[in-house]
Length: 236
Image (cartoon, rainbow, N blue to C red):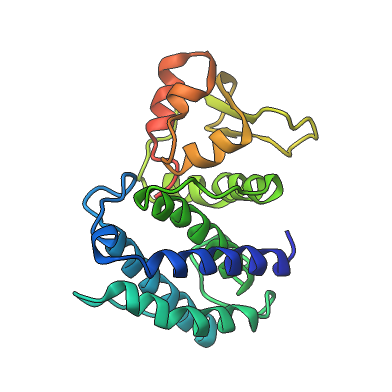
């Protein structure tokens, strides 16, 4: 996806998250189902920290420590940082060298992609905690998010020993995409022993633990192997 599409997705998520941050205190105190131990206010504080961190990395091009959110007033702190954060992201030169935790080449464009998906997933969390319907996400954007997991996050999880490599390959397939490489990838090496097939929305949300691929996907072949891979964790 081009940089302006990531920026538009990020801006849309920020607008909706800002509105949710203005809800009454009793709503901000509600639990976030996908983030055990977090309230909606904790979630907004996390986003405020991530935004300030990503902006500082982009501006300096080097790694910096992520700031801690305030003990109180995290929702207001989040809101106060959204405009400068979006301004920084809008000024990103995608090809400029910049530290990130993805594979080489390490450029600033990584952060546009990462932050657009970070905010999309957490907008789903915030909507759920607020008792609102989940936002509608475009197919192209979700397919890009699945690719981010395939190309960056799962290899990173394996490299950092956060999940054990399977003894045989498991193929993941997004149903409805027949263009070679557009909706399929494998985890592990060697012959494919199992496959996990799911519609795009289920795959996108399932890879981030916002739905259960064990329940929604069609699993063929070695079911036990596929379930071990799904437990991964495929993402942080």
